[in-house]
Length: 318
Image (cartoon, rainbow, N blue to C red; front, side, top):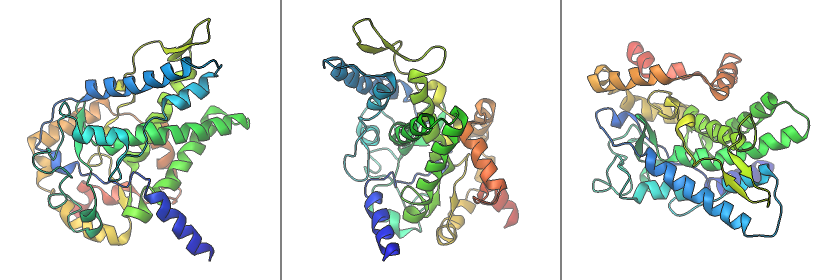
């Protein structure tokens, strides 16, 4: 009975989850225009709408409450898409791959998930480019909404007296559970390290709103809140949002379906465009609290090792 209730709970959560998968391998020979300016403007507009609404009320808010509300606008729309994902899917200013004139719902047949029937019955994630980093649109949903979930966990832990580092690790631990269940392995068979990186960067942004030497939110003498400067995603962008660079791990059934398609990229991994992209990634990549914590979990045998699923590894083993 308990197992049945758990399964039902996971199913209900999955209907509201970022269960899209994306394929950055298919973008290796594709050049997309930079959509960072659009993303900055779009998120900034939504944050300011929240601040305007809060400031219109005769009520006093503490900074952490304002920060939580500033990230709470990204609700669910349709087709498993959050508001920001749907916007990135459809907006004419955003260049995406597959292009909307190629497929409005994304392309499964050309992706590494072509042999997975589950993905043929729903919207498939598309790719965009921000400052030279290629990613699925779902990463922006993770940044805003799951970043908020991390932040709530972080604040709860801090209220209980935990250090910032411990509170951060507890938030990341929650993210690991979500990838093992309703955001990943149980639903799609995929455990995305890249999703977890996007989650963490969203947490960093939430923390930066109120903490540190120069918090991003400021309150005037009348108690009204504003941003010291417009939102900019630049400090939070990370090449680890590209799943062809920072690989996912898979349950056995899914890996059996996906591996043959990934092996098709063994020769393509030496293409000039791919090598240049990854060289750029390596020049800007750096470890985060999330990647460090995940590596510790891998070494402790608590998570599958990404290296066993990396292209270079499987190409040399086959």
